[in-house]
Each structure stands twice: as structure tokens, then as C-alpha cells.
Image (cartoon, rainbow, N blue to C red; front, side, top):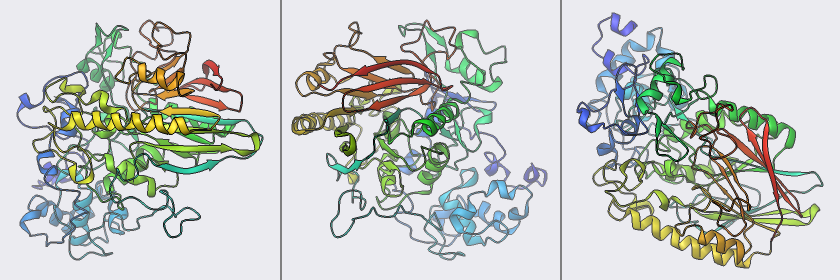
Length: 592
């Protein structure tokens, strides 16, 4: 407001800073309606297109700017987009009363506050985290705290685990490429003692980072006017009846519910919007998660993916594996690190897989590799490859578990012209020339479906080999797509259970909580294996209304929540925990 009142020519560049969501492409035909769209303050818009399409033609031709951090003067043609706003910020904007808000990332990036910052420091800011979106394409050559091409002035790395000498295991250092450790074992985890042993399971938990200043020309991750704030904001999607035949709430109607927080006339009752729940589900589930962790002290967490909505880490693939981009740092900090802490939870390992949204949702070239790289920047995040395994020992109680982590995203890797709104490989939303081939990812839209089919095929061979060699008490598989979705109408999962002894399948993707029991023979064809769907972590709105008095369209026992798994030598007990901390359903299973 202060900038506008002064008649400054750069006011438009700060639209996002003033609380307005960035506008989309001027051609409205480029933003078709679909079932998962969002609205800006005064303009209906599709946030999927906004987050994944705008600016990708720039991003696809360049790797993360930190990789090729060749410095240049602000007047260099490469910095033409940011030059004017950087000069304004350095010459007078930094004295504006709103400067601390606009330039909030400056301290982390340049190591100085706005009043102390030089022109080079502001160029560095606009290179790494451009307020309003006017990104510098090259960093400065001079700044207060070099190296000026780095986007974290005090980048912290997790200390190498004990025993990391020459060689070491895969926990000791990041691979050169994100697939280099595929199929390998994370170091054995051991938990001694006679206490009851717990494991928590959660998925689809990571909301939108509305306070991120996106790079590569991408608009802010804001689906409704009050979503531009620190911390996670839930992504709203449509709601359908149980058979998925009748749309109960269109995207436009659901956005209206969020805009008015359920109090507007344009928010129909059929949306099932519950104020206080639908508008903060990640926060509610995280609170219940922390409260139960304080009581049960879980040994570790099984994370089934869709860690960041809408499209994972909001940058193009290709950042070196030894680096964490500022974009990834910001999203992990706002959506993960600040959300899951407390007694019994802080420092606990999150053994993770990628979901379809982590690959990009409707594209394949977002920053999925940064989620893998974060394994070596964090003391608790574990995702060393798209598929891997972990052996867990409980020496005092004389039992063990082998846990296999699988990438099942072939389910959403379809022919380029098929189902564009739910297709990682779709030609509609992937930019022309999209590729992650240089780091071992898909080479092109055309080869993308086969890439994921081949990835799944090699995992099946790997899984059967590994589980046949297992002498652990328990065998557990963790993957993103829901119970039974193995491409064979549950036949392969049945084979793993009946022939190889797989005891439990932990999944997500569907945005609710479902316990599939051996007795559920109308849907569970996996030979008597127990499976859970834990997709109610709250990063995206639930499949149906969370109103417990209106459950006719529920697939399972809850809409938002997580699972508490108690493991012993003789039995696994699974408890479904609702967003309010109440236990809703439980079952047990024995090792085969």
C-alpha cells in the first residue's frame, strides 16, 4: 500500500507481497476448468496450471540456478527482469515500513537485514527467493557475505553418522545422482528395551507453502486469499459421492467455501465443508500426532508420500545432490520441520517414499530429486532412493522387521494424451522439452509412461528377491498408491503375501483413513493380507466431508488422521487415530 501511494513504477511487482495471488497466463483458454482448481482473490484460476505450467518454458531449459551460479552485474541482460525492482529495493524500498515483511528471506539468504543490505545482497535475494516473482537469472559478483551464488548463507548439513570412514554406507554421503542408491539398504536401525514398541504411519500430509517466493516464473502457492501465510495451507479439491459418480462439490464451490470459511451463500451444504477442520487439517493431525507421540514414543515414522502439495518441491529437477535449493529449504522448513516436533517425535526418522504429487502431480520434472537429496541434509528425513529397504532390530525382545519401500507411481504415469488432470506423463501440462534424463529421470513426455512401467517392473523383481532372502520376523511394504493397486488387480500383492510372507502393506494416495481387513473380501483380494490407507494427513482436503454425522460417502473409518502400529514378536496391532486424537478402529495381525 505504501508503494502504491508513492506512485512507484514497481508496485505491480509486489502484488504478491501485498496479499494478492499472482495472475495466470493472459489467455484464459490456457487455464481450463478441472476437478482440482483454485481461485485468486478476485479471479477464478486453476492453481495446478499456475503452479506447474506458468514459467516452465523457462525452467525446463535451465537447471536450478545454484548449479550454474555464474555471477553477473545487475545490468547484465540476464537480469533485465529484476534490475529495476532490485535497484528500487536497495535505494529506498528497504526503508519502507513493510520492508521486513517483503524481504523476510534476506537474513537467511544474504546474512543481513534489509537496512544493512547492499544492492548485491538484494540481487542475491531476487536470485534465490524473488518477492513478487521478478527473479534475477544470475547472482551478484559482490555481496556482504560471499559466496554470492549460494542461497543459504549458513547452510547446515546433518552430521555424518558415526562410523562413516572411507567408503561407509549409503547414509554417509549423497549419491551423485538420485537413483544411484536404488534397491540398496539403509543402515540397520536397532531399538533395545522391553518397552512397547510403536511405529506411526502417515501420508498425504504436506500442504501448500503460501509464504514461498517461487522461482522460475511460478506463481505463489495460494489457492484462496488467506492462504498466503507462513506454514501449510490445505489444498482444496472436489468431493464426490461414494461411487465417484456424482460430483457433490465443484472446484468453484469448494473455493467459495474456503473464501468465506463456509459462511457464504455460494458454499453449498453438499460440499460438506466443516469450519475448523477442513481449513486446517494438517495442523490438527500434526497436533494429534505429537500428542500421541508424547505418550507412545514411536521408534520411527512410515511416510507414504505426497509430502508437498501441489507438485512437490516447486522447482525444476536437476539441483546437484549435494545441495539443497532455497525453495526446498523453505518448503521443508515451513511444511515439515516446523510442524512435527515435540517429546517422542523430535529427531525420529521419517522413512519415506515419493507420491505422485512429489514427482510433480501432472508433470514429471519438478524437484523430486530434492526430496531425495534432503536425506543428507536432515537428521531425520530418510528417502535415499525411489525404492530401498531397511532392516529393523529389536534385540532385547528377540524379533526384527524388514521394511521395503516401493515407488508405485506407474499408476499415474499414463499415455501422454490420457487423463491430463491425473497423469504425471500428460502432454497437456508437461512443457515442451521437459526432461530429467541427465539425473536418471524420465527423458521425455513420450517415453515417460514406459519409464515408470520399467521402474515398477524392476522393483517387482527386486522385491521378490529381497523378501525371499529375509529371515526377519516381520516383512512390511510401504508405498504410495492404495491397497491392491499393483497393476495386476491385486495379484502381485497376493503373491507377496501367500508365497513370500509379506505381513502388512502400508499405503496412501486416497485422502482418508482405511483399514483393509482379511475379512473385507468384497474389496481385499490379497490372500488375507492386512493393508492400510493412510492418506488423511491433511495436506489436501479429504475425500468426503469430515462430519462424523454424515458418513455415507466414506470409504473408511476416518477422513483425517494417522495410524499407530504396535509391533512385537507375536503380533502387530494397528490403531486408527482420528484428527482429534481419538482411536476409531483397531485390528491385529500375526506373522506368516
